Length: 123
Image (cartoon, rainbow, N blue to C red; front, side, top):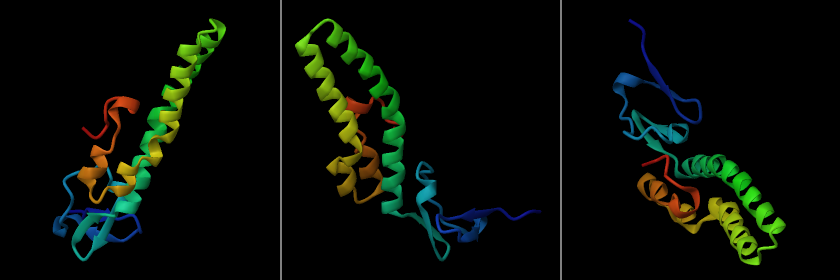
């Protein structure tokens, strides 16, 4: 029978049958191995989280560009201002202090701003 190995972010591996593994696999790319215990490296998890924000916000920014262009064509100052505000919020999402201040995976997942980005992929 073949042995299954778990590899952490640094390339270290362990026999999966002897490992204590986090139940949440969203941040598997941030796993760090210490003996037979696997934990999440919060710095690496934050990078993964920010990259997910960037992935989710790309189509939202594109859609908001259309909204802005329609407001520009209609010379609607209020709609233009609202669009500029929304695009700024989308651009600033990866820099949120809640992400920086997250001390654990639960806090990091809670840092997803549903008002700006929509439903969380971590729910």
